Amino acid sequence: MFHIARFKAEPFPLEMHKVRVVQKLNLLPIDERLQAIQEAGNNTFLLRNRDVFLDMLTDSGTNAMSDRQIASMSIADDSYAGSETFFRLEKALQDFFGMKFFLPAHQGRACEHILAKVFVKPDDIVPMNYHFTTTKAHIMECKGSVEECFFDKAIIPESDNPFKGDMDIEKLKALIDRVGKDRIPFVRLEMGTNLIGGQPVSLKNIEEVGAFCRQNKIMLVIDASLLSDNLFFIKTREPQAKNMSIHEIVLAIAKTADIIYFSGRKLGSARGGGIVTPHKELFDQMKNLIPLFEGFLTYGGMSVREMEALAIGIEETLDIDMISQGPEFIAAFGQMLQKNGIPVITPFGGLGLHLNARAFIPHVKSEEYPAGALAAAIFIVSGARGMERGTISETRNADGSEHPASMELVRLALPRRVFTLSQITFIADRLNWLFENRHLIGGLHFVEEPKVMRFFIGRLEENGDWQERLRAKFVEDFGAEAL
Ligand code: F0G
Image (cartoon, rainbow, N blue to C red):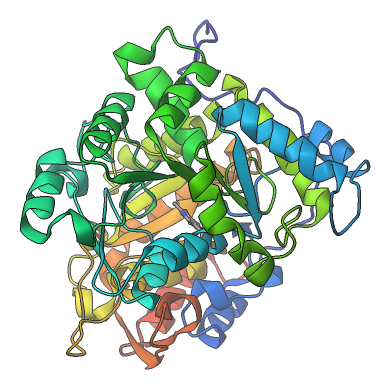
C-alpha cells in the first residue's frame, strides 16, 4: 500500500482487498441518537449496536475476516478432546512464534487470569511498559500491583517519537533495587501499547528488555494482542528492521520472551486467545488451570470454527498488505483532523485514532470525565461510537478519591478492513463541526459506579443540560431533517 506510485494524487491508503459481504447500517436522526446515549448512561459500551452508525468502539472481535478464514471454518473438527482443528492451530502458532507449547483460552483476559493465578502472589509487583485494564484487574485480584516503567515521552500527546511504547530499563532497574527481585514474578511488555494510543515498542527495546530480564533471571511475558500493528511500525520506522521479513521480526521478538499471550479477537482477526512458551516447566505450571477455567486443553473455551479462522489469521499477519491497512487508514484519518487543528495523539498509532480530550475540551476537568463526555458528544453528532480511555477507565485510589488518568483519550477504533475512506471522511467532517462547537460540551458524573472496571457498565449523567444545547446547535446548523 504505502509503496504504490501515484501520479498527481496526494498520498492516500489503498485497499488491497475487495468487499464481498456487507452489513446494512442505520444512521438515526439526532433526537434519537441523543435519547440512545442518555438511555445508555452516557456509556458507549451500553449502546445497542442497532442505534450505532459507525461502530468504532474496538477492534476486538470486529476485524473483517478473509475469504480463506471463512472457508477454513467449514473444515472445523468438532470434538471435545483431540480435535484436528487444535493441532492445526497449534502448528500455526508454533510456526509463527517459533515456540513449542501452546495453551488455548477463550480470550486475552482469560490468559491474563491464568498468568496472574499461577505467578502472582500477594504483594508482588509486575513491572510493565504500560498497564492494560484487564491485565491490571487480574493482577490486583491476586493482591499484586502494577508498576509502569514508561519513558516520560510516552505520555506527551503530540510527539514525533516513533516508539512511545518503549520500556525505560533504568526505571525497571530502580524498581528492582527498591523492592528486590523476589517480589517480581515477571516483567510484562505490551506490544502496540493500547492505553497510550496504540503506540509501538521498538525491536531494539524489546531485545534490550529481554537481555536485561535474562541477566537478572526474571521472566519476560509479552502481550502480543496488538502485535500486528507493532510489526508494521517496526518494519517501517526502525532502521534495523528495514531489511527483515515480517516473520524474522516476529521470531526476533519471540526469542526474547519466556511467555507470549494474545487476544485472538485482535491478533489473528478471529475470536479466542492463547498462551505460548518454549519452556515445558512453564507450560506444565499453567496447563492444569485450562480445564478448570477455560475448557479442555484442545479447545480452551474457543469454538473450533474460530480456531480454524484464527490459524489462518495468524498466518495472514505475515502479509504486509494485511498489517498495513489499519495503521495507514488511521494515519489518513488523523491527517484529516490535524488539518483543522483537532488535537490527536501523534505519531499515529495502531488500533484506532486517538483524540486528546484534555486538549479538545480543556474547560472540562478530569473529575468531570472529559474523555467520557467527548465520546458521548461524538455519538450525538455523528452516530459513531468510540471508547473512553481516560479517568473513567482508571480505578479510584484506596481512599475513594479519583485517580486522574495520565491521558484523557477518546479512541475511535478502526477494526481492520471494515470501514471505507468515505465513512472516515464523514466522521472527520462531524468531528470538525464538533471541534468548532466544543465550548458547548460539558462534563459527566456517575449515577451507578461499579467497583471493578467501572468503565464497562457504569452509568453517568450530564452535568447541567449541555447535551440538549449541542443538539439544538446541530439542528440550527444542519436543519431539522439532517441526519
Ligand atoms: N491485552 C491488550 C493489549 C488488549 O488490548 C486487550 C483487549 C486484552 C489484553 C484483553 O483481551 O479482550 O480478548 O480479553 N482489548 C480490548 C480493546 C478490550 O477494546 O482494546 P480480550
